[in-house]
Length: 327
Image (cartoon, rainbow, N blue to C red; front, side, top):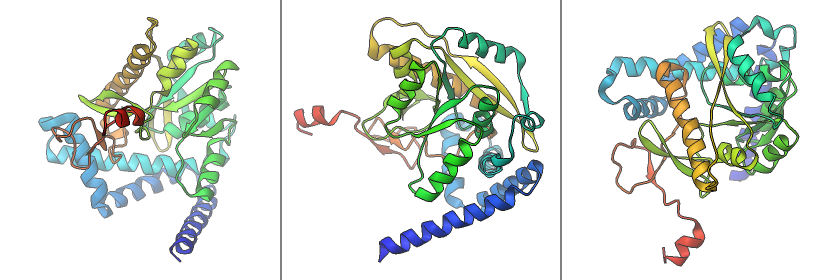
């Protein structure tokens, strides 16, 4: 019975999202942005859990340098940004090569750097994070002639995943499930394409590596470094800085690296460089990152230390080694 109730609940949720999408597409983008901001504002005050997670994360990142009032403001604006970004994703059906320029400014110098990276002839590893309007960044890339192969996490609700895949691929991108996405991303590089990874998500159990983020280890997926070591392709980090009313300014930065021949160390150094860059970006405008996400849910030590309240110790030793050691 529980299975049928869950299926009914998921079906109703998908129906609600589809209906909401139809309504959203009938409105101007600026109005959709305002609806998203208002929904995020309400969501913040109606969700004590989101507040608690965000504030705990901000204490980890900034310690006592922020007042309680500042933490509240950043946490609230962060959720407003996330909700408005997701609501505006469903508006993507109205984007086209003519209209998107009304909502997107291009940083010309960094765009030239991206084009220079294309000249290497190895494809480009594209990286981003849940900052600003990351969804519009991906949609715009295809409209700029750079069709991405995007690794996206699944929600576990089939109908919703199909709708999200449709929205994200609306402008010409290809979306693949984040789980076991490495072969598809590597194939895109072999075809001199553009594999794309959102680099601030927790890795699945026994599939990641520890990198430092705001001074604490997080269990991150190693995909960016793995692809770079496999191919030697350049890495470009994309950002979508909000300008208000649903508009953004796109910017790119190259993550430089060199290979030493020690595969594991090279993968780690590259992934750490990407995480260091993400931290620098977030420190400049913390309200544009997703603080309600349980980024430190796995910790590398049994003692909590500086980790937030929700973290749990995770032994990342591969299963085969753990068995051999008698764990």
